[in-house]
Amino acid sequence: MRISKKDEVTDILKLISPGTPIREGLDNILKAKTGALLVFSDTKEVLDIVDGGFFIDEEYTSSKLYELAKMDGAIVLSTDLKRILYANAQLIPSPEIPTKETGTRHRTAERTAKQTGALVISISQRRNIITVFKGNLRYTIQDSSTILNRTNQALQTLEKYKKVFDSKLNVLNEYEFNDIVTLDNVINAIQRAEMVMKIVDEVQRGISELGQDGRLISMQLEELVGGLEREELLIIKDYLGKGTNKTEDEALEEIIALPYEELLKASSIAKILGYENFDNYDEVGVYTRGYRILTKIPRVPNNIVENLVKSFKSFQHILAADIPELDEVEGIGEVRAKTIKQSLKRMQEQFVFDNLML
Image 1 (cartoon, one colour):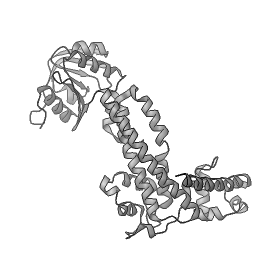
Image 2 (cartoon, helix red, strand yellow; image 1 turned 90 degrees about the vertical axis):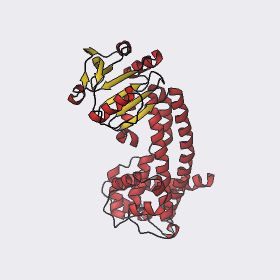
Image 3 (cartoon, one colour; image 1 turned 45 degrees about the vertical axis):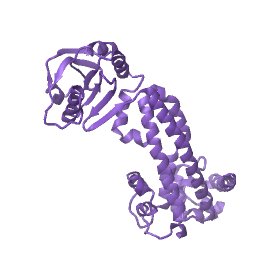
Image 4 (cartoon, helix red, strand yellow; image 1 turned 30 degrees about the horizontal axis):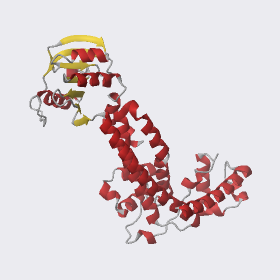
């Protein structure tokens, strides 16, 4: 999923999610209501602003962290989170660094994170809240029950959006076989896929925060949207305009980067795909290359799909080809040609049935 590749917050949340040794220590501090200031870095930039305290250099355990947090000063841990280096230390970041925080502990945490780029965690003694800082990033950790409720709500919303996407995809499937696809059909399918993926990002964020408590939701998510991103990528590959030099991956990246308001504009998607601006996209006929449908045929590898599209140029020509014509394509052979022909016929019947059941 996309968020795991790109979202810095998610990477941090995985380090301190429920079930991890660090989170166990943080939870112990929360229960004791002692508060704490923790820095997870042993770089020179961090050590240069550490003053006083005790040099410990002991292996990390949650109980040690809990005991050391009873003292007022900051605790400095190694970057790999495996050792406790300093306890009861004073951090002296530059006072010229701007901060919007009010408490002394949080102001120091924000300035330290901005100055060093290190991961810094501040636990408020009065409010009993965990706040994460890293560079200019600030994130407040909520309690597990709140996160679970929020994530379940996002999952329910995702199910509704996925049904809408499935209906758009079913229409596209049938229209591709009947050669009546319009640019509007393609744009609608891509828009709905992106709406689903944006909600997926929210659910994944919750799963990362929940840690081991999010395993069931993670399984539900995979069951619900597994393969959807590849489906979207293949739709783009099928309908990229002939005049564009971009790849399907590049086009997808541009679509992902669109603000939500732009995503809802058909003209924005059409432009990325390499089409002109039309008054009515429902009147613009387009032709699929056939990658998406062909990849659904069992035991037909990607290189054979590429050879088919290269040989016949369009999905309609592949549909119209007889077994001897398919057999002539490199890597196919008579047995595979029959499989392709029969599979396409079954799929066409299934797609018609699926739309009748909507």
